[in-house]
Length: 554
Image (tube, rainbow, N blue to C red; front, side, top):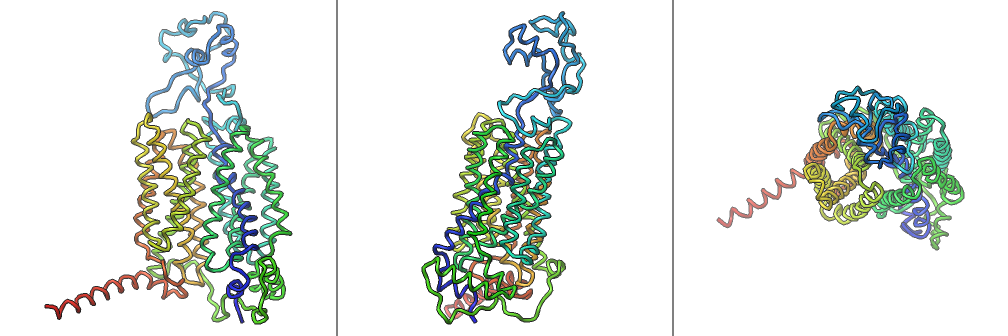
C-alpha cells in the first residue's frame, strides 16, 4: 500500500493547496513575533529620574530649561561601578521652601552638593518619553527592575511547559483541534493582558500566552511540513521561520505608530481571532489521521488536496498505510539520550547550542533596546539581516554541508559581540555593521540547530531528542532577561562579553558533531553511533588506497 509521500508525488508536493496552506500558517508564524520579542517595545526603559514635589513649580517660576532643571535638582552619576543616583535617588530637600533661588538653588544648603543627603524615590518617577510602557506604568525601575526580568522570564516558562506538553496533545487529539484551541486562548489572554489593571494580572496573562503561543507556532510548523512532499519539507520549514522575520519588520512599524503599550498589545493581539477561521481553511493532517487508523477521513482530505491542485488520484493509490511500518515497538527513554557515547555527545552539544541560540538571539534584541539610540530603526535594520541568513542556509547546507556553516555562524556571532565591545561610540557605522553580523550569525545558528537536531538521532528517540534538546532554548530564554538587565547595570557592554564567550564555545563544539549532508536518517542506535566513525573510516580507506597506488611507482 502507498504512503502519503508516494501519493503526494502524484497529486502535487507543493502545488496550489500547499502554497495556500503555507500562506495561512505563515501568518500564524509572523503573529508569534510580538510574544517572543515584544519585550523590546512593551518593556522599553526610557530615561527617568525621581519625582520631587515642588521641582516642577520651581522650574516654571524660574523659567528653567530641562537641562537646567536636571543640572540643579538631580544628583549626578555616582562612583564607577555603582548604580546611577540620578535615576534611583533624590536630594532630601524641601523644594517648596521659598528660600530657594533660581541660580544654583542648592548652594545655600551646602557648599558641596555631594554632602547633601540622598533618599529613595518616594513619590515615583518622571519618564522622558512621549509614550508609555509597562515600565513607566508600573514603575519597574530601580528596586522594582527585577519585575521586568520576571515578566519576560514568565513567558519563557510558558514556552517551556507548553512545548513539553504539545507533542503529546497534538498526537493525542490532532493537530487542527490543538491549533484552534491555542489560537483562541492566546488571543483571549493577549486582550486581557492589554486591559490588566495590575502588574500581577498582566504577568498571569503573559504566562498563559507563553503556554499556548509557542505551542501553536510549533503545531503550524508540524502541519505545513506534513502537507508538503519530502523534497520540499526542509525549504518550507526554513521559510516558515522567514515569516517570523517578516513579523519582526511589521512589529517595528506598528510599535513606532503606537508608542503606548496597551494599544500596541491590543493591536498585535486582535488579528489572532482571525486565525479561528482556519477551522474552514486548514484541514487535519492526513498523516495524523492515518496514525489514528482513520484512513477514510485521511483519504477524503487527500482527494480534497488533489482537487485543489487540479490533479486526479489514481485508483491504485486510494489505499493508505502509515509512513512507518508496524514492527517491533521500542519505548523511548530519557536514558537512551545519554546511554551510548556518541549519542551522549550529540545530546550535550545540541542542548548547549539550543541554549546558546536562545540566549544570544533574545539577548542581542534586549540589549539593543537599552542602547539609547533609535530603537525602532535599530530593530528594523537588525531584522532585515535575518533574510540573507535564511538564503545562506538554503545555498550552503546541500553544497558545503551542515557543520561548517553552523560552526561559522556561531563564531561570527560571538566575534561580532566581542568586537562591539571595543568599537568606539563615534564609529556608528562600524557598530551597526558588527551588530548586524552578530544578528545574522545567531539567526543562522538558530535555524541550523532546528534542522540538524533531528538528523542526529535514530527514529525511535528522534522526537524525544528534539524535545529534550530544544527545551534548553526556553531555559536560555528564562535566564536571558536577568543576564541582560542585571549585567548592564554593572557595565553596559558586559552582556556582549558573555555572549561572545558563549557563542565562540558553541561554534567550537559544533565541529565535534558528525556531518549529516547526504546521509540517510539513522534508524537504530548503532547507526547513530557509527555516524562519526564512518567518516573517519572513509578517510583511512582513501589514505590506504593512495599508499597502494604509490608503492608500484617506486
